[in-house]
Length: 154
Image: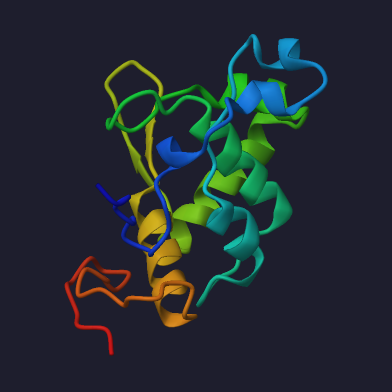
């Protein structure tokens, strides 16, 4: 049976033959885990339209991704992320506010708990970026605008 291509016309990650950690001389550095990051994010974050991400915002997004274990939005505390990034809590909050203003992040309040961080807007923008920049051999009817409305891509 032939391999099914993903939405963007590429093989799904399961199709790769070699375990990730075996590609490196020191697989032990992956003992604490690793973050699956779409290559498209790394290639496009600085040129997303209409609002590119700064390197600090991109690093903040990567930190959020380390807490994304299920389909539910992650909910790490600002202090924890700030410590991991070696910046102040205030700077981390600025990253979150900026990403929210750009439409890439939605923060949800949880009573007496840390916020949850929904990156659906960012992933929607990445998808639209891929489709509109011909990073997909087959343009899909699934493309959505930043407001989440379905639209046909030509």
